[in-house]
Image (cartoon, rainbow, N blue to C red; front, side, top):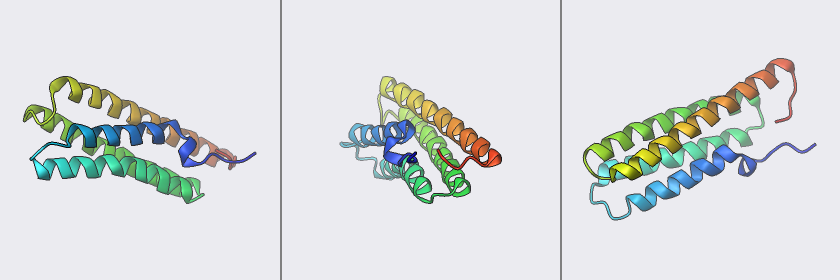
Length: 125
């Protein structure tokens, strides 16, 4: 049985979609520093999922998923700040927060699955 590609992972798809939506929400913003940081952290989430997946090692994949979790926490913090300074409307920021929390939960579930597979010696994802 063939192992999954990162493109098959629902968490990667959701992270990519959130990143695109962050870019769109901030496209007209003149607040370049926070805008740049938010775009970078949003891209980092999906990128780390992909990079870890392509390492073909459960340990490496877990490490990169943990980095992705850090990036999504960073992004969530930035969304809170962007909402407070009215860079993003409150309703949109609430949606982004919920989506980022969902991604965090999915990442944690994937980490747990990989740790379990690693401990049992089952190499397929």
